[in-house]
Image (tube, rainbow, N blue to C red; front, side, top):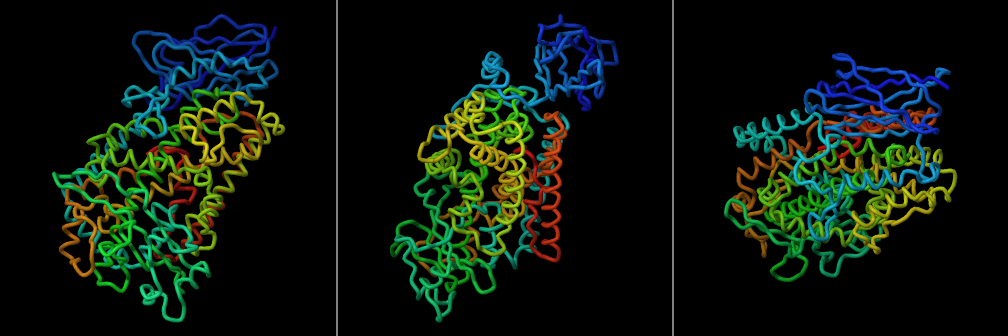
Length: 640
């Protein structure tokens, strides 16, 4: 019989230790040991402590931890269990979980193993995991979410650490007080800072490429039938030596269409009805390579009461028309690009992972870093931000009911292409727009993630057959398709995986959505969305029905009131807070224990570092820099 040395490591956080009693048992090929107490008063389970014990058993498949009440109910964070063989070789059992109350946790060996490799002995375990995270429908037609009402009901592993939570709430409170106390001063400062650039057409167009919603613009191959722009209208922009059709054929004309907003229920703020438009905006790449607006129609049905606004119109007519487009951008950005495409889908990916993929599965190990704190921030958001009466209902033209309807519409239009950056860029035909840094930086990182994922997939899956015959993987993909994408066949989103190539694309999409995409649509909110004339969240007067009636005073009467402004600044500041989780590609929790996957992680980190260097070099000397997709500024997960 062989003797093994067991090491149990506690997390370093001040609350990670426990005074409860911890037992351990080893599960081996010949059975399992009786549980043995691991407890020596005052030493073993303090933060950062490492406890050891000796056992005598054959080959080990897993370890089982038992936490039992002693003196008081006390949570414990276990980092890992290590087992050293008689020959001196150490095997790690990654845990990185909180154990709460009286509980038992079985930890598989750190080597990633698919169900097929274990003869599907994990079926019973997965039934237990599936019961621990249940789905519920938050709104008809929306992705399903975890069945938890309050953050206090979340499992400990899904909550912020005490430090991170305190930091976030303190930042929230401080920002709120500062904004309320200095509201008028803040607005004046922003006007002074932005009085030149925010009204410029080039800055307006720049935001479609590198603002907080850089995923809406698309190439125009012909003007929409309900947007009757003619050569005379745009001659002041294009010049008389060309025509709109010529510029379209040259690939220089682009557009955005907000038809999805048409007819949405609007909100009441401060007892005052709010208004919404569903504009169309035509843009042109000028000789300076700027993308500038050349025509705006504020409604979907052309007519005398729905004029097409032009840069040649009066200053305030044109300025207000652009504000209405920016107001439409606010809703599409916050409710679709940000909430739906990153927060809600990340939650779907995570819940399905906890229900269908055990800790030892290689896909679980690959993805788990990209779900840190996602449930916490989403449940908190449903409580405080997007709920009826929540913060967004206090600042947004469409409120809670309108947002639910908007997300439902977006779900009906959702495509797999829109989730995969290379295909999304191609489908919008924006491969050649100059100075499109979201595309440039995003594609570099997408390809880096794809290479990393490819390495992992090829290491664990020998061929396509091993992918299609992995029941846990198939159950995971199917559950995401059912609970997240609501079995929308026309979306093209897969319900199963048949090849390594398809799996690599799918996993790249998941990681990109939870990290890079979220950074792109989240981190610039304070920069672009807290100066009301640039991105108003609500409008207090209806869109103009004729030209020549807009004045500076009527714009002030249309923009949000001061309390709405301060709440928006508060939200933008909190949502653009500094990272609370590790940056992309840096994984402090060692879930992969084999040398080869560890090398793949190091290769990934080196590639991200080179991308970061290139971005910094490009930004040198620029007055307007794009930093949101510098890998150093991208969190692993949707954590804020």
